[in-house]
Length: 178
Image 1 (tube, one colour):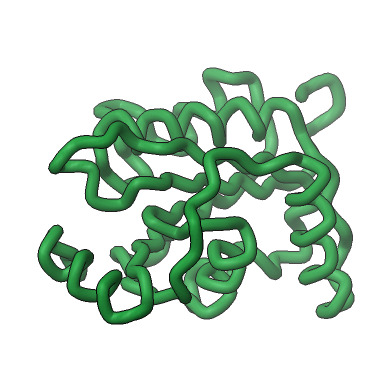
Image 2 (cartoon, rainbow, N blue to C red):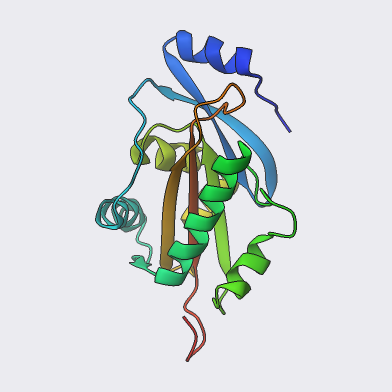
């Protein structure tokens, strides 16, 4: 796992790029850099649907539809990461992806991509596509639903990343389940 210290983050930021961390289930954190941009505080479902589906259409993949349950799980994960200033699939104890999905009533399989520090949706999607483990989730043809969230972390010395992103992509739930 690669650790980004505050000093390293500030050095990267000052040099014209901004560092952000991606976390995927199959690997440790991956450090990416993006062009400087003003960080956003929200992402609309319409914008996310448009951009994610444009990426999938280019690859002849099934298009995604928004799923309210996956949205709730993504929002919870982004909030947990922002509260804990941590990009991790288990940002809070006993909060694995499987646990969060089942607690919210999602009965299908899903993948989760996370990012910290990415300023906007375009940079986040680009970073995920450049990372082999995240790319795998993004182009999985079995995933046809999604939920996406961003949370801004508190303005503290320990909030290294500023923005915390969570994308959940899932299969269709069995009949009768969200």
